[in-house]
Image 1: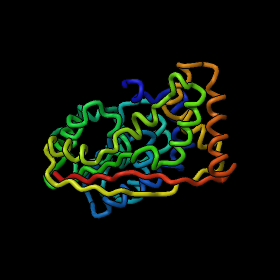
Image 2 (image 1 turned 90 degrees about the vertical axis):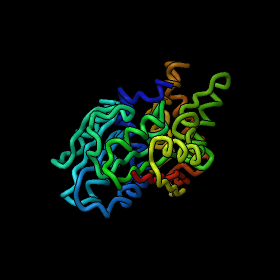
Image 3 (image 1 turned 45 degrees about the vertical axis):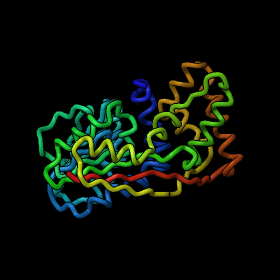
Length: 268
């Protein structure tokens, strides 16, 4: 759904503040660590969002590596660029399915939790292949099924109870709806990649309290629009219901839950 790709209004700031440390930072560090052998050159980041991976790359890679950070949502890039000021980073709006870069321009392409939003994954993967140098790597991750990601699973179930006839299922449908590794590997090979490997990575997600979790998911993602489209005046009610469910399962706070994702590496 096209609406699933829109992150604007108050969403970027809430996404970065609440979900960033809780679920995205652990995997950002993981992705950046897989590129530490790169001593110089140029990295492309697609679906950079609010710059969580960008920050990890800046920290992990030497000064001789530059980063082109792109996203289809200008509001996300605005948030990222307001938080990160480095001559090594160039910010640019771009659709991963139609990249504005020449062939063979990059030593690596990195994408954190963005592939699930690509309407045409083979096309996006082919673009990553095109802009890589021979021997370059495409690294990305996708969330595993929602049942393996405890906070998201609890939040979706809690909010669904408020809208039983038409539950908001953004989280299950898009972020957690593209976890078939075999399908991803086939799409990568169709896009031209030869060597493809995958690894399932499990981490713990931590938040200071249940409300932080609820605000992050209900108000800091496109789930917000789903709720408001069903009842414009029930966003707070939905957020509170999610917080109550998180507290009932994990305690009133601090709270910790499992997160799980697949990390894919494809070599050109």
